[in-house]
Image (tube, rainbow, N blue to C red; front, top):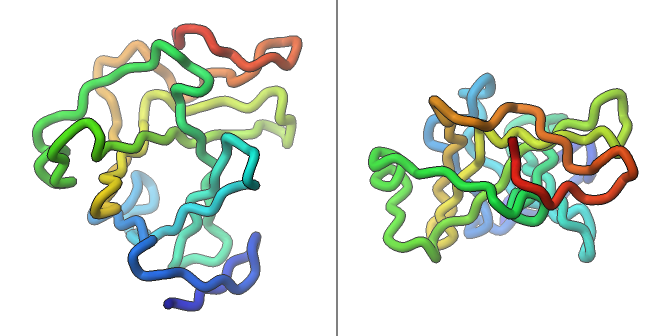
Length: 153
């Protein structure tokens, strides 16, 4: 067990086998390599990716398919090799979320840069999709507050 101080969650105990490792860091956070995934709560589709190095660094994420049923992308061969992905069952995909001006109804998902995690080893990488139809700001909810559930554009 590793004891980690965080701004959002206070002091937490992290089991070594639950550490998500980004060998190259995350774009714009290249020095951040080790994280833990913390559920927002038991019923929520949201999780936090909490840095184990920087107490105030935590990203809000979700599984994109819960909101964008037609979301799809290819994982390049280099990433498959680096993450030692052996089958589609080894892949867990999250996207980072932004809550502009603290307004949950205006929350957006970065579908252009999914986080890919090997479920067996917890090796991870944030991909930046090139020549993609996706952007960094896809709304999770429509104007009425209903989940998007539509094809991402």
